[in-house]
Image (cartoon, rainbow, N blue to C red):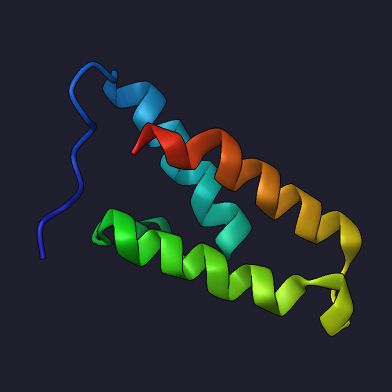
Length: 77
């Protein structure tokens, strides 16, 4: 599967930093993340949000952090 490339207009450094931040909050290796499509990454976010949701026994702080990273970075894809 091909490695994701930055969208037009984004510098490689910035794009790499975005992917690193997403990989950290999703707790998946960066090498795995770069092979995922936008839709697959969104599904990973949704799955992780269900896991860490406070109503499911997760941490409120973790849930908020995940949501913030998704809102801040996902629009850049």
